[in-house]
Length: 439
Ligand code: UGA
Image (cartoon, rainbow, N blue to C red; front, side, top):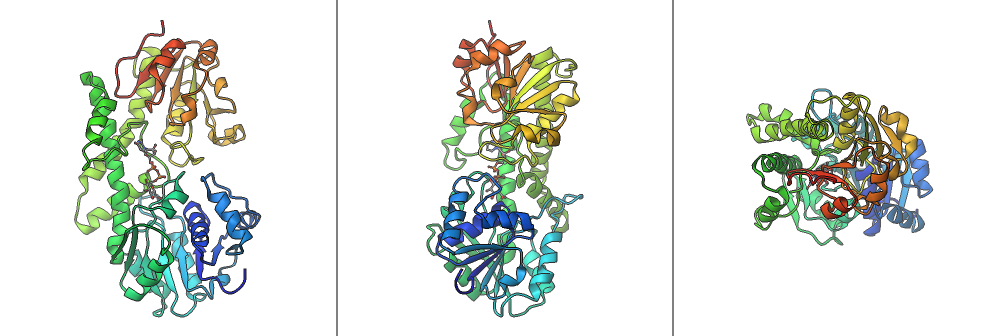
């Protein structure tokens, strides 16, 4: 890379790497600092360790154009005008966001950052972090800006380059302007606000999505009791522009590295600021109940009783990641349910297009197959847990031929009912009509 980098990015996780690669794509000179030497080396070779559409191409293009570089050395940031903090803020033992990595980095950065540098937090951080970070940094010449990310895994590059909004929370108008200028090539509304509002807006958005999903999951259960169909109900709701069509699909519960951690972190901050946020609390509880409800549903379908033992039975599982389009297993409801089935005595074999059979030791006692047709072998039932579209196209007759019982519990309402029926499968849906008999 020639000349000093204009932009520094600390952390090469899915947020940091996407930010670095996309900013390079937008024409900035970017250096990305990753503490893990092996990961940094792989990235320098153009090897992207996460599955994110379009990211490898952008990283390689940035490397080839010398607009993007990777290093383990924080001191490479000393001439950067703007530095983004993209460090993980995982869920701590008490539900609070764990800011350990971020705080440690501030201490290091204090002695490294250039004069008048702008330090931007992209990580999801509790309200007040920008203010606290400024105190910890003890560099009055450095301005802090909160610029939360709204990237979905599996769509991160697209969400960065075509976002619904860019939020810039800053006390200092000049610093806000400098950060906004980085996004000059992006067509999206830029909302300038104070740091606390920017920080809270991120949590508020994720918590709202969680509330919406828990509501749909509970409505799905009500549909089953009342003989309605959640797909029909959702269709009607979605056409109201105030509700919108997105995030209305019921499922095995919401998971991933963001919604579970952010709802809990938001709840942790609620008593301190006087608000109860009972709606968010209820959404979290409903999500925990959803796992049990799905387990009960599978047991009922297989044994006739929601608390029936699965001992001695084989269950096949389709999908292990927390949603389709990612290889991420963190807080995956699919994986939790697969483990729950094993706890109830079943021998569970799972298949996921993004999970290699070599991962098996990590996921034990769930066995991992590298062929979807192996999950059906002698199975008393198949449970579809992640909405990978390719599951729709499986040769279900071939699966039926190997199962002990041709029964599928479709927790994503993904599969075509008629096609399954033709293959001899009985289908149990979520919030849907009664299962069709296999014969
Ligand atoms: C979420 C937010 O959607 C992003 O806007 C945010 O930037 C990101 O967290 C973050 O904080 O970094 P992500 O974790 O990638 O993104 O996952 P989502 O696409 O939101 O899905 C969350 C969960 O909801 C998944 O388990 C998914 O299967 C479930 N879901 C989603 C449903 O069950 N039904 C739906 O209709 C939609």
